[in-house]
Length: 68
Image (cartoon, rainbow, N blue to C red; front, side, top):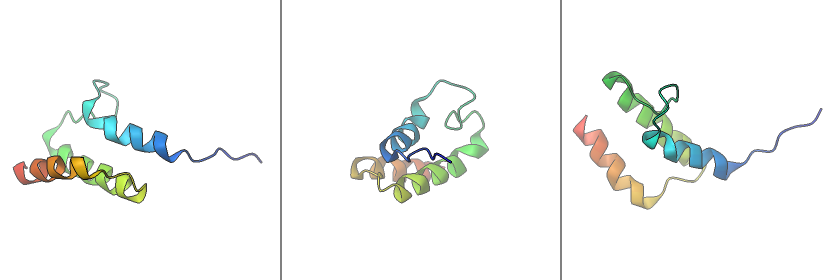
């Protein structure tokens, strides 16, 4: 059985771009207010596990969470 390699950078790029997508079917297109914070939590956790949570976004993320 052939396995597909895990491409960390592609996963991280997808997660980072979620908040900028216009695709209404994408998980990052938060159409409901009640999904914004859990979606942010999921994305932050995933980026942390991938070791791709950048220092520059930490302040932006903290501001978003405080505004909720």
